[in-house]
Length: 385
Image (cartoon, rainbow, N blue to C red; front, side, top):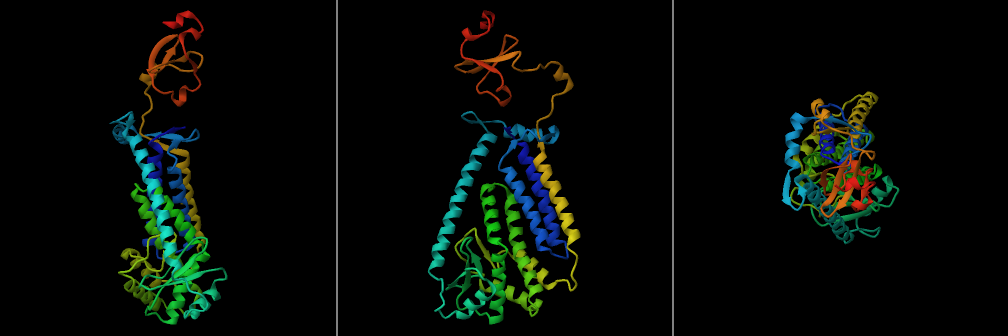
């Protein structure tokens, strides 16, 4: 296995393909199936995980592309002028440093929000007993409620010990508050906070990749649309127009206020205007008749499998294969005709008892060759020259 540019290219194409497919589902499809859409995100995260290990595995098949990708590889593998690192090596180093920094900042934000919310958690003796009873009615597990003295968007935060966050002195009716609570409780029921945290960590690791931010944006939209559709189906008294008005109302109310950032927080209304528009469009255009979900599920699974299998089993590499003419001048290199001699500059290569060249480090393909530490250890004296 060796570090290569190939997995970067292959995974980038796979993610771009699934992101485009996801765009069709969210913005061109008239129907929304929450489970089906989330399957696509599973595939995208698998490919992002593959991208975390940019190595050519022994079982991968290489597809060469010399004309298009070779000029790019020449730039990336050019000498950077810093020690013995090429540009690609520096990119890997910067990538790792940036990822560690992002994860540290993410953890700090999570701790900061947790400490902030502790001051506003209510109990059964507070004036918000109606909200406590409503939450306990629809959610059997422990769910803390924090009433924030600001016009923030309702949200739910926390993976192990979730907290429902509500604004204080907001102009919401009991019915509207019920819909908001049910919406946020559904996030807890579906374990959306776990997946959101996972997506955020992936975004920290791949901070340099513009596609990861697009995927994160569309995933947050999917979570909200899924819960909106759930309320439309399970609550017979929910009016589509009134619910759309509620979304707009909360958006206007929380336009200029926000909570400290945290990876495990899902807001009822976010700051992205395009997501808000798409969400309202789904709410107002809910189909009256139930549409079969199975055909869409099969299509999504097939699309997902093709993309994931391709990125796992194939690698698009910019290195071109050796031509037949060059093969005629080449030779086999194995333990029967070659060996290495350790010298101060690195390792000298001997093929058929003749000196061929010197390398600084031993490549993976040379690991099976015998290594001598001095010429006296050679099989015969002729090899000393």
